[in-house]
Image 1: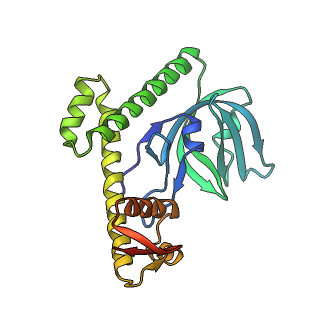
Image 2: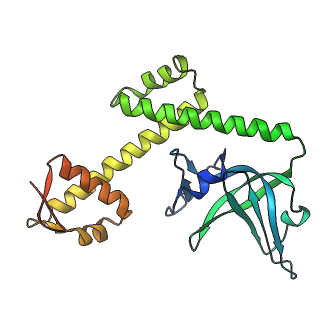
Amino acid sequence: MIERQTAKKVRIRDIMSGKFVRKEGFEPNFVKTPLGEEVSRARVLGTIVSKFVTEDGNYASVTIDDGSDTIRLKVFKTTKPLDSFEIGDVVDVIGKVREYEGEIYIIPEVVRKVDDPNFEMLRRVELLRKEMAAKKVRELMEKGGDKDPEELRKELIEKHSIEACWVNALIGEGNREKSERNELKTKILKAIESSPEGIVYSELVKKIGAEEADIEGVIDELLSEGICYEPSPGRIKKI
């Protein structure tokens, strides 16, 4: 059974400035936001600033603006539910985050018109508090080093009054990110060790198959820790 992903409330800027990650198999693709959240399904609130509907009824898109950035909602082989909204409408949207040819967009599942201005204000306040909480959680996680996750979770909730749902989500994602980085580090070290004369950086990237930016970060870490060195430019060798 495939678990349905929770729709996370985010600003459009968080999605558009994030990194789109494609997963294999049944794992959902997601956007990694600057706050560290992994967003497969998003919930955004914004004003429709443009709309396009094809005459044959096989495609429609609207662009919404929440004051932080804009994003397009797209539907294919239909125009519903976008055809019932107009430019100027404020809409609350739940949908799947997708990417095609460099553009991140949303395939809407639920679109609801919002008439109450207090609803908009409450969402903005909620997202601002979430951003502040995320920054505090990350700051304390970095300072905490190898502190027990449960101890850190308790400190964040009781001492810093951060909502438990945000603490649990961010600590979980932070620990998963740390675990994935350690796995990548181990994989890279094994690849380097398998080449007695060292391995050329381009070959290492091809062999590992991960994101080049992630590989580069681990290599910098290995060099700074003195675990590896460069016997010649672009070639990495274990000491």
